[in-house]
Image (cartoon, rainbow over all chains, first blue to last red; front, top):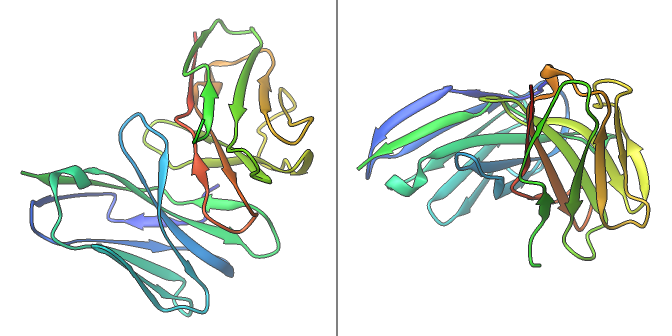
Length: 111
Length: 113
């Protein structure tokens, strides 16, 4: 079973617009990660945010974490056609070594 | 190589055949994970190794699935008597430590006819 759920399931935007996707999870975590997956490829790590952090930036990416609501958001600013991919959040279950992935958001950026 | 390498990239098996999928992690990475990804879904955890020790195999769907990492580097996921529901992409990931960034291979796509 998957602990995280991304919202929306699919998102289509114009190049240059911002894309926001959300992730909700169910149990306590140590950290949360976001990954990107191009069609037919493996996953690529984007950013890791620890449970004691509220916001983190990396280039055009901004991630927030609200542990009280058990949710995170990923913002991609000034999107490009090359950002077209599926995006997944992954949470570690406290006390285990598992990383549990969400269902993913399929982002399409139109040129 | 610099990244995680998986082979074969594509495997077609007849129902009932046994298959073996190989993962070469990044050199020196202690942690190794196997995930199963069905079409349009997120990766589902199968099993976790720390060096040669299999610390968690709770995600293996049945006793037909077996994974090993005998020398703490290369890992093999074996599926016996394959069934159609085993068709999926099998992803391997390694990490220098259990709680950090995962480095994924390109996956092995298994199709069971």
